[in-house]
Image 1 (tube, rainbow, N blue to C red):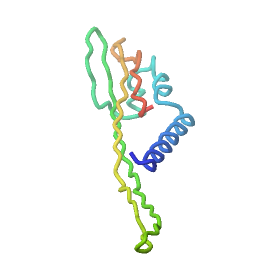
Image 2: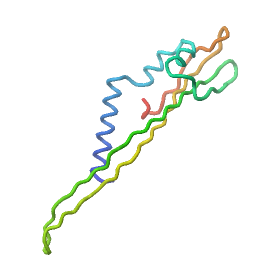
Image 3: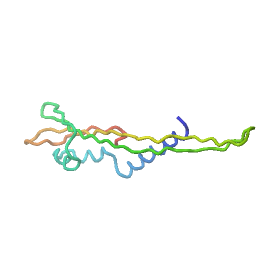
Image 4: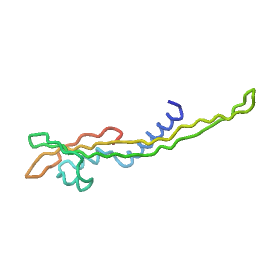
Length: 128
């Protein structure tokens, strides 16, 4: 990995960490739903992507979020003096599309004909 690409990745990670510190992490938001009916999450984020019956009056409700972003390419160059004259050498790093897939899972228990959230699974670090 070039030092330029490593520097870009480091600055991206720093930006994400800063954004998360300012907005709070997904787990903080998710814990606010514990004790509430599943409909609370549905009203805020739409229907779940998957519902898994865990047996014994328990279910897992899962929401999937996919985000994409374009990462711009870069170009840099330097002038080199050789015995045959001056040469300009250019280095290009192509842009790319970055795709992030996150899953948010709540556990719920049946009570009085409704489902109430009892716990949640922490999303992977990149999704916090």
